[in-house]
Length: 241
Image 1 (tube, rainbow, N blue to C red):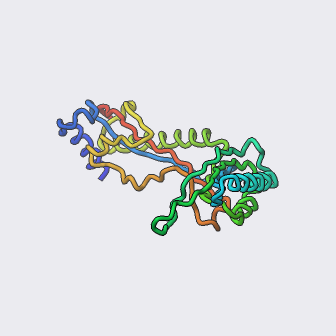
Image 2: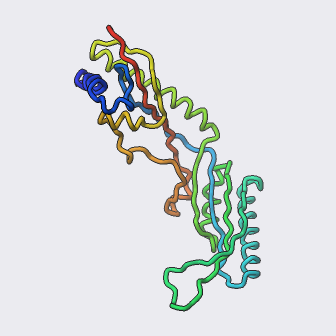
Image 3: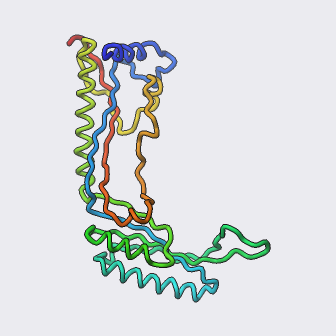
């Protein structure tokens, strides 16, 4: 099976002149590999909106200011430093309801968005529980991270590259060839190449990064996070074993 797979790679490289612009001009082996690790986070992030539906602009602004001070007091109670709380400008705009009687004007809303970084995750659960029972809070979203993420991802990248080389060596050995140097590497799929070779990855298999909008009961729990690095590598095929 391994020999048939490697032979198919060689044949495709030589027999697809219409795809010459997408394929290397030398005999090659193309491999993909990945490495991942599940870790507990040490930093959390929270986004919330404080909203008032008070039609009077002055009263709405006063209400938002009061809710903002109450929120800051809650953050301070759970160890969030003032410099870790970012408050955007207050916005007043029309709010489109689910149903509006004909001829009635759109109601107005006054909204302010907050972003905070929680560095002591021992306070995460009580802080989230406090936010979840606050009134007039919308668009609650959370995310977790690691303060050493760059180092972890660098180590994972080294592991993925090592796995790719071992995989390529196995393929070369299976067809009685010698593995040459790497002539191309990418952290993203080499789309033109994988499609030309019939090896395109399932786009749904890659989990996009982003903020997590979980059910409220789960938001109060600190959960493990998955860090991963994937590589696509092209190796030249040499003659002999």
